[in-house]
Image (cartoon, rainbow, N blue to C red; front, side):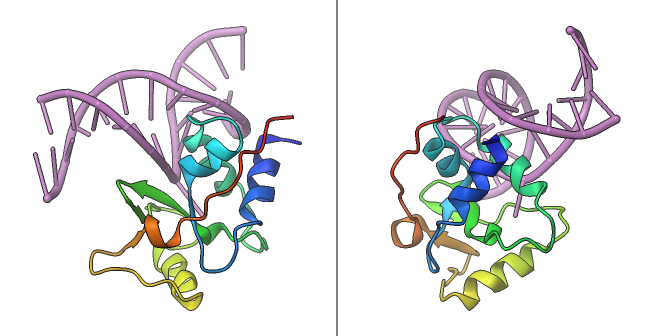
Length: 110
DNA sequence: GAGATGACGGGCT
DNA sequence: AAGCCCGCCATCT
């Protein structure tokens, strides 16, 4: 399985109402420092994908923030999708990891 | 094969 | 507190 296929497979397992960070996905995949590569993988995703890419946010201290600046989809769209799933952003447009972060068991690299 | 790039993250200024 | 810089990993040209 390619790196990005593993990223997609993992992202697809994120349940509704939960989120992960790029770094968290990388860690679960066995490469703690591959956060950038995770973002790269999601960037290669077709617009029509069924992968819930909007549940992956950037990590900002103990909060998660939408860290898209230029992309096919807009940051507003991502936020809208998340709110539609019941997540609530604070006044500064971020999500508390303590509430929404989904912690997954590590998936050993094949 | 080498250099540049990006939806990142953490540390330092 | 906000911004800048450097290191990371997988792709792309």
